[in-house]
Image (cartoon, rainbow, N blue to C red; front, side, top):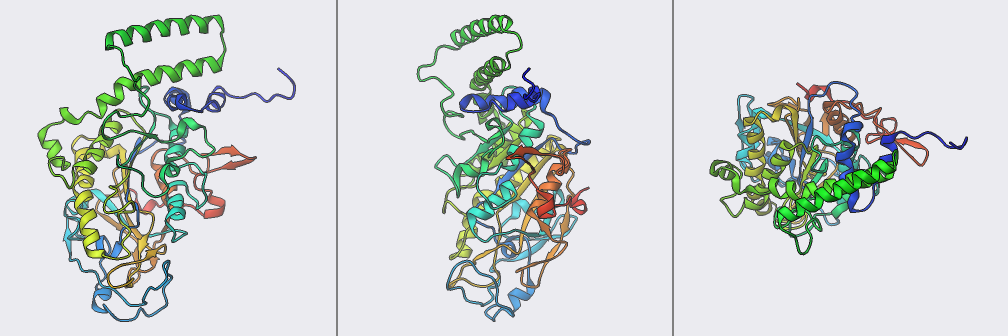
Length: 463
């Protein structure tokens, strides 16, 4: 070895090879070596139900009687707005709230199915974030900071823990087959982490993974024969070149791609699910069928050993379906009708199967909405307060954490930042957010960057 060369671990060397389609396989191959758990874990996997656009907390999760009472009056202070032309006039919620579960959690009439799971999730009402602009707030929620080009949380988890299944990537994305929500693929990028840890798109319709199947596939018996023959040749070649990590990585990449041809199609074929399960997720109703299928696929992927699954919302009524600058009432009714039942079904199904104990389900948008009216019947962006749900994986079921002011404008009690949330999720996966690092441009980078963000584990929301 040259005296200037620094020894590199096998894991770091292989991780650095990630690139192109073959890199999708690398995360699974590394799983035997890559576990970086720092403590016993309460959870092994995460499903993120991302609600792009900014769900309105005071219309869904955070009832404000004072806001309703003072509907049409001026807000007592000048609130921070994003769009021009906002009126500083309070807008009460048009929806009714009632108590649910043994915990007595107050939730909106818009989400009756999630309300039925009130005892199974933790409701955080005191979230806040850094920016009122969708792309920047999306970056913060997914990567910890507003900047483009940083690794997504799913990529960090994949990098730290690898996959529990050698036949599938550790980080999988399920989006609306019709297209992309705001920021597109940026929100599941691996940034400067090895490319093996980026989110892999699986389609909820048609061929599960793009470019995975050959244009003119051979019969299965012939494919298996060809794979076995190629494996024998690769093994022989590897014996002739012992210690060649590049060759070993390339072989593993192609072998996982071959496994995915079979495994991905099998896992995403929902025809074998019972009629009761299909009905639970709403696959029998046109409003819920598409989103319900993605939620059901997420359960199947997690069950198979995938580490992180990201489910994106419908593209209707818009590519930001929770972004209601106008038509608040009808817009919320429309998107809740599509997502409420499948979201609740996922929690219920995981619980029935004994999976909710070690799988985290996170229901969140990138920010909240303002208590004042925009135009006649809309709400503008609000970075100062929003609500989210955390189920399973050691989070406290039936618990409400934090509070906003009388109008839902600002988080004022037991406030939780996005980096705090990330630190807490990593903790439940057995990872110390201060120790999960990657050297980039000479700096040990972290998801939470605690020296800058002050990120902490929110132990009050843990069971």
